[in-house]
Image: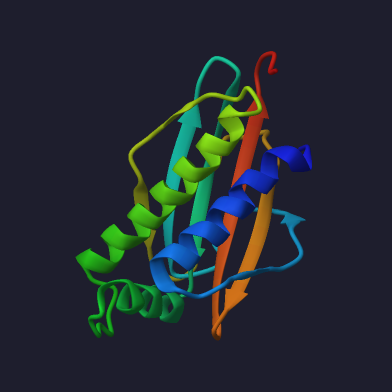
Length: 159
């Protein structure tokens, strides 16, 4: 997968975390995922599709990172992954997918995004479209970690 299609997700993730928490995440070395095991305890996932593109993005958080980010966003102090934390993870995935969508539209890749799905639990599995490589982009900041996975397949001409 061409890096020009991954960079919008990196940029959008950095913008989202900075806007929502005030922290500046650092991108770590991306890699191609093998298998479908998650890299955390809670994942927000968004599918996207249109005439020229199809795929999904998943944003996964270890429990401690999800709680800390939720607390930063709301000013609350929660210690369990409750419904509000799950909703915030879905919303973060939505913001990241939407931000990338805006950037990719400038490259001729227009698509519609789905409603977020949130998966909770240790060792959960993330099912992206089969036969599509998944690029994993880890981020770290303020002793926290998140992982963004992007699976994308171009299905037609772009600009």
